[in-house]
Length: 456
Ligand SMILES: Nc1ncnc2c1ncn2[C@@H]1O[C@H](COP(=O)(O)OP(=O)(O)O)[C@@H](O)[C@H]1O
Ligand SMILES: [Mg+2]
Image 1: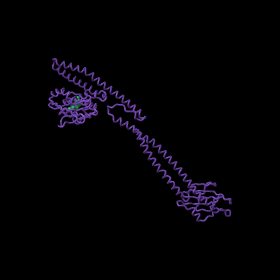
Image 2: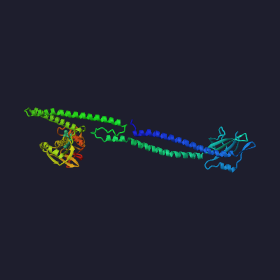
Image 3: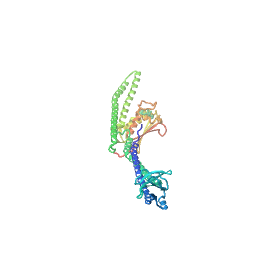
């Protein structure tokens, strides 16, 4: 199962309890506000009870209310609620009132407040037992009030409390979200730092700016990178050693075969020896190419001897070694070289140039032409054109892979040449493109080196 994102996890853990606390706090505050409001309204009901009690007199041993009707009326008129009253003797005889009210629970001389229902509507009732000085009977005074005012007040309290609570919730969500995002930026930075790395960049990830919690992860990652670099290094060294070790016996073998071929021998045997020579040359070429590849691989970065070079000089120096092969194939080998400066390893750049010229001559039929060009266009640019068989568009990525050859390619190549060119180009930050020359036949391979900055 996929783990939820850290952001969501943190948000859940922080926001959930926070909202819970907020809800509890709001409920508590609401309860307190409502209780004190109820108290205030209840106290207000004591005023009419007080007024009534002052007008009760005893006539013929019976309690009676002596109050002008207008006073009574004004006492029980309210803008929002209906008010009812009832005066009864202790034994339940009602002697005054505008509505029959339910008998109160056990009463003392302290006022009692309770909820009841009259005529189908809810009311709040205040009741008081009044002892009379001149009568053995006590009087029970009850006043009931409908709940409009109280309900309205309840809504007001709710509104007053809910609006700020909502604002708080919103602010909390935003703050927590912002805080988490800020808190997680080091992780994003780390991610960007790792994502931006190229295959050849196995340097340790800097640890000092990372937060404490992430440091162990970085440390482990760095250990891994370190081990990986060591492993690659070992592999590379093995490849280079193996290739190097193979070269000597192969060179000896080749010499021996060449010596043997100079001697008289039956034609049949000669044919076998000639095949042996081709195979030996091929094996020697392969060993050489493997060695070059090992030197051009990312892990060999530290072995590079970077210098300021001029492509023109470098090519001029090797022209001679290609003329013979071109002539043998009647290929018009031309050079259009102008100064093109770059920073690079002369040995590797030499291999790059050699592999491109080798391919061009190899894959161009007799009487074709090959042009080697270099010039400065921002950075140094190298172009090798030929009018040979060309590389089909669909194969232009594949020919850069190791040991890949286009089906039916002539010659006894091993498919490493362009892979080497590609690796060397990458090591130098150069860009390699395969296209067709302007006259729409053959191959153009262009290597564009980066502009040289800060020459040493
Ligand atoms: N100049 C070229 N013209 C046509 N095809 C080419 C050219 N250069 C390379 N190729 C094709 O790309 C393949 C890979 O080249 P390379 O890596 O040098 O290996 P190899 O030359 O050993 O076959 C070759 O087999 C060939 O088919
Ligand atoms: Mg080749």
